[in-house]
Image (cartoon, rainbow, N blue to C red; front, side):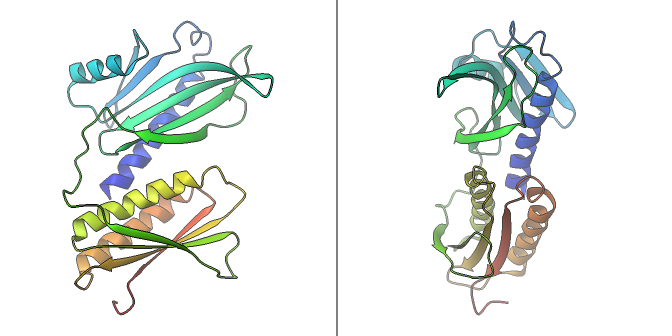
Length: 241
């Protein structure tokens, strides 16, 4: 479950960075570009970026050595439908997740007090870390929309399979991460995702089933509180236990 735990850790670091920055509103205009680097569980290093650029980030990470994740910040004002909008922008990256996460916090343009909650924007490729993932090709994955009448919203079945169970478990976690982020912008619509798992050319092992059970528990305990409009159901290809 390392992939999902890393993604949740990154999301938490972004949230912590937002809470931290909102206590520093007097200094943000002078130093809007901060880099908060997670070196370990309780070790966060913060620095003012000399230049807000990918090159500076890469150089800093190289100097730091082993780092777990980091978040960079920016203060942005833009015109939206003829009205000025000011927000704090956060881009976060983790050494175990191949996509970065982008969030924003709308603030009052005068005193930078928060307006509403921290909001998800999008994901983008993680160009700062070389991600260690199983070497096989990605799992086969197809999506089908269901017509179940008892689903309030959209129901989607993902048919995912591979011959390599290690790669399969990894890709199931990636699928969950991508899926919850994709539906974040539709908070009024509930999504039920059924993940049907196949071990191509064989029967799912007890080890695979145990790992999927652990992923299911993690999803219920940590994903649902963050993404209230999703439900996941896990099953194995018909004929397997």
